[in-house]
Picture: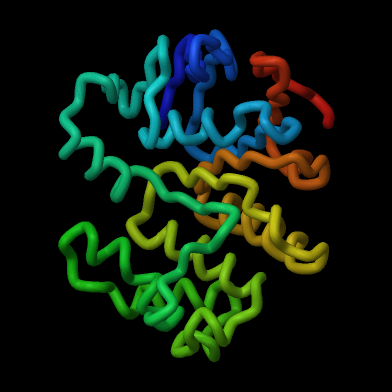
Length: 224
């Protein structure tokens, strides 16, 4: 098992009021899982993904990675987990504008204190059909191309789990479909585990495990 979340609850304080985002959420993520979490805006999808990715903490409950409760780990160890164990893809690509596509892809290697594996970066860019664009800067790429580079960047350190937060939210239909096809291809070719949040039923439908988050409750769905 890659990750186990048990009885997660989260709320936010607003003055004297407490807003409950979700409560008592549990989830297990295995190698090769393609998990989708669908729900309306404001339902807590991003908050849940941030907790699974150690970017936020729950009020109650626990997140275990490789059997270790992340709450017991030092900030140093958690930072290393984020860089080597997890990959992140956000709605906005967050590519650094002064670096080329290839240089952006190599950044996770460098954060981990390694020399950038240029051959692997080129191989991954070729895998997504961007060999001829690897020396281009983000401003010279289309929105769909930038997101695909961000996906490949998330794979550079061979993470056990990639977390993608509304990745198609800012894309037109054609680019959104291409990105969804890429997630399915990576999942199939590399047995890569994904958790993808979305409000789009077509994106949610690609999951081999599909969940719906609304009203603070996460429910399993056979069909969306």
